[in-house]
Amino acid sequence: MDKIEITGGIRLHGEVTISGAKNAVLPIMTAAILSSGENIIKNVPNLRDVMTMGKLLAHLGFGFHLEDNQVLLQTQKVTSIEAPYDFVKTMRASVLVLGPLLARSGKARVSLPGGCAIGARPINLHIKGLEKMGAKITLSEGYIEATAKQLKGAAIYFDIPTVTGTENLMMAAALAKGTTLIENAACEPEVVDLANALISMGADIQGAGTSIIKITGVNKLRPLDYTVIPDRIETATFIAAAAITHGDIKINKCRPEHLEAVINKMKEAGVKITQKNDKLIIKGPERLSSIDIKTMPHPGFPTDMQAQFMAMMAIADGTSLITENIFENRFMHIAELKRMGADLQVEGSTATVKGVKTLTGAPVMATDLRASASLVVAALAAQGITVIDRVYHLDRGYERIENKLSLLGAKIRRIK
Ligand code: EPU
Image 1: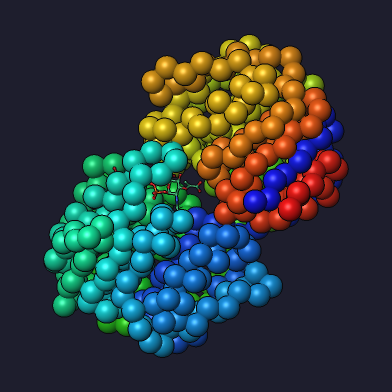
Image 2: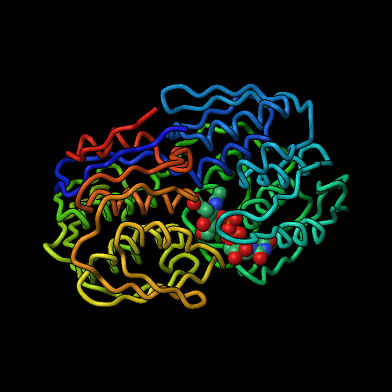
């Protein structure tokens, strides 16, 4: 298993270019199921999760090829309607095949995801929505078995806004008979990107990016030729890396408008941020100021940046309260950050972070994708050497992170 070794204390300087968004490309790849032909998706990051999704789509009978950040998907025929446990257990986003497979083939068999490192993460709302659209769904031997001769439009209200739930239903509704209304829909930029991709295929979707999405089903969708948005969480992770190292960096090819909550909080913490079209110029202060955050659905502060922000607050001036409202177990990084000298206490869903003068390098273990990103951010500022174990978590969501950080001057290497 690969490890990453970082020698901390170096001020980051230079330019970095942001890759395509993991959480946009995964649903867009599954949207290809709704078409029959050659799909082209551009600005695709070369990530473990993208490869896993490609293998899952190949298992369904599709041609999959990733080269030069471009994906080709040949979707002429479906030879299997099953997403086996082996895929779903390595990547929960595999459940995104449920809606489009059901819409295209009239049936789907998808392994029910188990719990995961950040919380229970049920998919009851995906299932309830599909049932409202006329699907018959049973649970058998750990699998969701769904059938529907023809999905029908329906009015669906989510008790909680769910990102992949909104995406699954939007895809199912795109080929359903009649109009579907999703209320309390997720408003994340990745949901909007999927809607735009579907619209480019000929779908009739209005309101994506607001809490009410209206989808009027069409008979047929054409294959994709679509360019994915830049990754807002990768962008924000680089902001954190520059902020914590008193760095001075330019971030190219990003979408600052997707990051308003993060940018505002970073500024409050003392980070200087200048925006020029699709570029951000970041200057970290000599010492960060402590501020409080609460994670919320978009446009609130994203849960996917909570861990990295905590690493920053660990060496900020004062005490910060960090509340995680989306997932019930997304504090696995705390035990590891403590091993690096952070002063952290958790009660319920709130962590109290008392800023210390410095963190020190230590051997630590990555537990999930964003937890590992927070350890990288902390290690960049820590005195001495940090070795991060289980970096395959990092490879799920950050393209060539050690190369990008090296170009910014960080002393970082992968140990095979
Ligand atoms: N929820 C339910 N029932 C459902 C669906 C969700 O109770 O049927 C709950 C969840 O347990 C959670 C909340 O609703 O408490 C929100 O979860 P959501 O469904 O929005 O999360 P997701 O769709 O499974 C996506 C991202 C996550 C990101 C969350 C929140 C993808 C592939 N994944 O997950 O990304 O944290 O939205 O923004 O888009 C990551 O990239 O590291 C990551 C975990």
